[in-house]
Amino acid sequence: MSRQILEITLRLPDGRELTGRGRNVPATMERIYNQDLTQPPRRHVRFMEPLKSGQRRYYGTYNVQFGYRSGHDTTLDEVVVAEVASPR
Image (cartoon, rainbow, N blue to C red; front, side, top):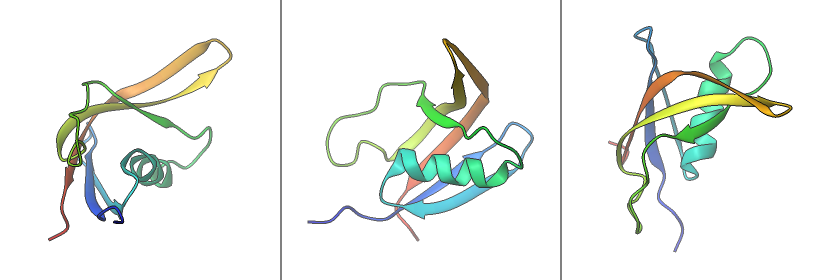
């Protein structure tokens, strides 16, 4: 059984919404967020709440942060609200 394609919406603090679809939720969030950036380094997602368990663990609304590592330091951007749902 293959994983279902999910609709992902990122609500940025400045009011913009970024949307995309994908099966791998963290990778899709990173792709959507990084496409909006004009310069590197690429950011990686960090979930601020524990995920649920089971097949539908990504469904719902989460607070996430994007950041990158530079040596031993991790630089994090502001908190982004991520909503994961089935495509309409």
